[in-house]
Image (cartoon, rainbow, N blue to C red; front, side, top):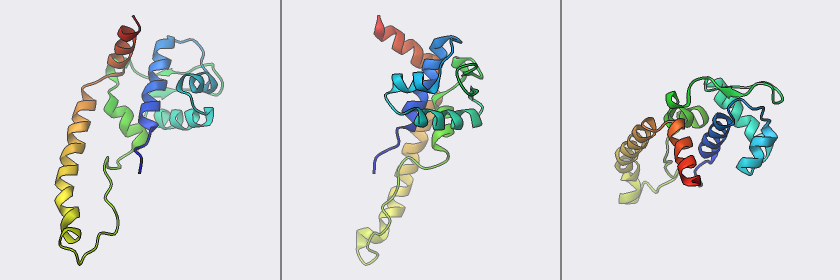
Length: 140
């Protein structure tokens, strides 16, 4: 099972909108930068709008971040597009008659939860502004 790309697409589109500095952008414009279908962009924009991170209206008239990029953490973006789901998923049918199969889920639960918390803590330390500045420094 692949990990969703919604998060990286969301960061990409928010960074692009931030960098556009108010210039009109359509979902087609954003999709061209991301390399995906405009429908995918509109779905993700809807999630970001619902989370209060983005203001958008049909067409290119008014799409902008609702807060300064240094006030929006990657954690907020992650939660907006991925919800409360866990980073790691457990396989569904381990054999209960096998010693490992009978105990694997509870053995992995703590490790998975610790990894999730560390990832979330790290994402809380990085803002959209940090991402934009990193991109700009790499382009020079």
